[in-house]
Length: 116
Image (cartoon, rainbow, N blue to C red; front, side):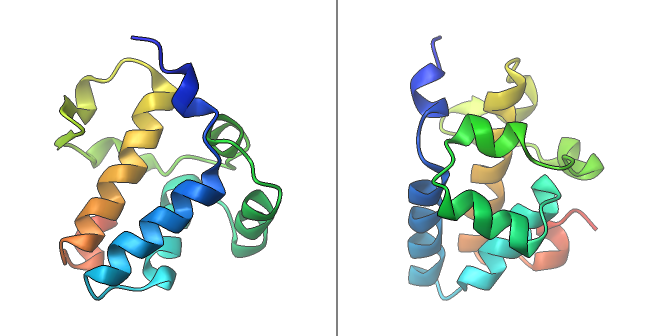
Protein backbone atom coordinates (compact mmCIF):
# COMPACT_ATOMS: atom_id res chain seq x y z
CA UNK A 1 0.00 0.00 0.00
CA UNK A 2 1.43 3.37 -1.03
CA UNK A 3 0.89 5.90 1.75
CA UNK A 4 3.01 8.74 0.42
CA UNK A 5 0.01 10.89 -0.44
CA UNK A 6 -1.27 11.03 3.15
CA UNK A 7 2.23 11.98 4.34
CA UNK A 8 2.02 15.15 2.27
CA UNK A 9 -1.25 16.35 3.85
CA UNK A 10 -0.88 19.56 5.78
CA UNK A 11 -0.95 18.96 9.52
CA UNK A 12 -2.73 22.32 9.93
CA UNK A 13 -5.63 21.15 7.75
CA UNK A 14 -5.88 17.81 9.58
CA UNK A 15 -5.71 19.63 12.92
CA UNK A 16 -8.59 21.90 11.90
CA UNK A 17 -10.69 18.84 11.06
CA UNK A 18 -9.83 17.24 14.40
CA UNK A 19 -10.95 20.38 16.25
CA UNK A 20 -14.21 20.54 14.30
CA UNK A 21 -14.87 16.86 15.01
CA UNK A 22 -14.40 17.10 18.77
CA UNK A 23 -16.22 20.43 19.14
CA UNK A 24 -19.32 18.86 17.57
CA UNK A 25 -19.17 16.33 20.42
CA UNK A 26 -18.76 18.94 23.17
CA UNK A 27 -14.98 18.71 23.60
CA UNK A 28 -12.46 21.54 23.07
CA UNK A 29 -9.50 22.50 20.90
CA UNK A 30 -7.41 22.63 24.09
CA UNK A 31 -8.15 18.95 24.65
CA UNK A 32 -7.07 18.14 21.08
CA UNK A 33 -3.85 20.05 21.78
CA UNK A 34 -3.33 18.10 25.01
CA UNK A 35 -3.55 14.70 23.31
CA UNK A 36 -1.35 15.70 20.37
CA UNK A 37 1.29 17.27 22.62
CA UNK A 38 1.22 14.17 24.81
CA UNK A 39 1.78 11.93 21.78
CA UNK A 40 4.48 13.97 20.05
CA UNK A 41 6.42 15.68 22.83
CA UNK A 42 6.01 19.12 21.28
CA UNK A 43 5.62 22.07 23.60
CA UNK A 44 2.94 24.66 22.83
CA UNK A 45 5.34 27.00 20.97
CA UNK A 46 6.82 24.24 18.80
CA UNK A 47 3.34 22.92 18.08
CA UNK A 48 2.07 26.33 16.91
CA UNK A 49 5.18 26.74 14.73
CA UNK A 50 4.36 23.47 12.95
CA UNK A 51 0.83 24.72 12.29
CA UNK A 52 2.02 28.17 11.16
CA UNK A 53 4.56 26.77 8.72
CA UNK A 54 1.92 24.35 7.38
CA UNK A 55 4.16 21.34 7.91
CA UNK A 56 3.04 18.15 6.22
CA UNK A 57 2.35 15.08 8.35
CA UNK A 58 5.71 13.53 7.53
CA UNK A 59 7.58 16.66 8.66
CA UNK A 60 5.32 17.06 11.69
CA UNK A 61 6.20 13.59 12.98
CA UNK A 62 9.83 13.64 11.83
CA UNK A 63 10.45 16.86 13.76
CA UNK A 64 8.45 15.74 16.81
CA UNK A 65 10.72 15.87 19.87
CA UNK A 66 9.85 12.41 21.23
CA UNK A 67 6.99 10.01 20.75
CA UNK A 68 5.40 9.30 24.12
CA UNK A 69 6.68 5.98 25.49
CA UNK A 70 3.07 4.97 26.26
CA UNK A 71 2.02 5.39 22.62
CA UNK A 72 2.41 1.67 22.13
CA UNK A 73 -0.52 1.24 24.54
CA UNK A 74 -2.79 2.81 21.91
CA UNK A 75 -4.54 -0.15 20.35
CA UNK A 76 -7.68 -0.89 18.42
CA UNK A 77 -9.01 -0.35 14.93
CA UNK A 78 -8.90 2.91 13.02
CA UNK A 79 -9.85 3.29 9.37
CA UNK A 80 -10.26 -0.47 9.15
CA UNK A 81 -6.71 -1.25 10.31
CA UNK A 82 -5.59 -2.62 13.66
CA UNK A 83 -3.14 0.02 14.92
CA UNK A 84 -0.76 -2.40 16.59
CA UNK A 85 -0.38 -4.32 13.30
CA UNK A 86 0.58 -1.33 11.13
CA UNK A 87 4.16 -1.93 9.99
CA UNK A 88 5.00 1.51 8.60
CA UNK A 89 6.21 3.56 11.61
CA UNK A 90 5.02 6.90 10.21
CA UNK A 91 1.58 5.56 9.33
CA UNK A 92 1.31 4.04 12.79
CA UNK A 93 2.05 7.44 14.39
CA UNK A 94 -0.60 9.09 12.22
CA UNK A 95 -3.12 6.43 13.23
CA UNK A 96 -2.17 6.82 16.90
CA UNK A 97 -3.10 10.48 16.57
CA UNK A 98 -6.36 9.62 14.79
CA UNK A 99 -7.26 7.14 17.52
CA UNK A 100 -6.59 9.63 20.33
CA UNK A 101 -8.83 12.22 18.67
CA UNK A 102 -11.54 9.59 18.09
CA UNK A 103 -11.45 8.63 21.76
CA UNK A 104 -11.71 12.30 22.71
CA UNK A 105 -14.70 12.78 20.41
CA UNK A 106 -16.38 9.68 21.87
CA UNK A 107 -16.24 11.22 25.35
CA UNK A 108 -13.55 9.03 26.86
CA UNK A 109 -11.95 10.45 30.01
CA UNK A 110 -8.65 12.25 29.47
CA UNK A 111 -6.80 9.98 31.95
CA UNK A 112 -7.76 6.95 29.84
CA UNK A 113 -6.90 8.66 26.57
CA UNK A 114 -3.44 9.55 27.89
CA UNK A 115 -2.92 5.98 29.09
CA UNK A 116 -2.30 7.04 32.69
